[in-house]
Amino acid sequence: PVVLSEILINKPVSENVVCCFGWGAREALPGVKVKVLLAYAGKFSTQSVCETIADHQIDRGSRVIYADAGACSAGALSAANGRRVWVIAGDRDPSNPPSGPQIIGYTVKNYREEVDYVISHFVAHTLTPCHHPDIGIERGAVDFVPSRLVPKKIRDRLARYRQQHLMFWTTKLPRVCG
Image 1 (tube, one colour):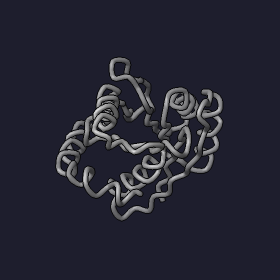
Image 2 (spheres, helix red, strand yellow):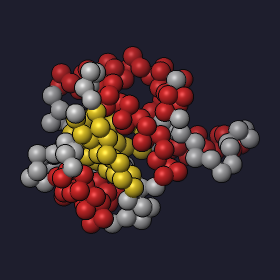
Image 3 (spheres, helix red, strand yellow):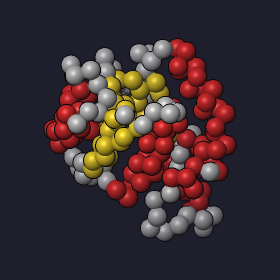
């Protein structure tokens, strides 16, 4: 099997990430058994906490680590250094993309779109109280940016796949994952 890892910040906010990361990996590797190791670092985790978690997951066979946010990305990158493991960094500012020989890509958040979604739904009285809305790729609120280490052929395939499946992501994926 191919072993992947996720290091997430906290459970309520990261529910869809858990399901969708594994689902996406299985979709990208049809016919290959994919095992996802999951760990929660805690809401205010430091780089060292995430580095320790990533070290443990690498020792258990992980080949790709997705660290959900901020300091966790730096910790995962530190753990992967020199260990032939790929990293997907999380919550990065596109004007300051991460770099390094292990980074195959990073996720970005478009806070303007997220805030617009929340405010417009609040004004329309359609924002559910005490619920974390999934404001995703279909609204331009989040995205994945592959690094230049990923061959152009694969980046082009990702772009075509994204375009072909955008309707699925907006209508069916929430039911598949949750």
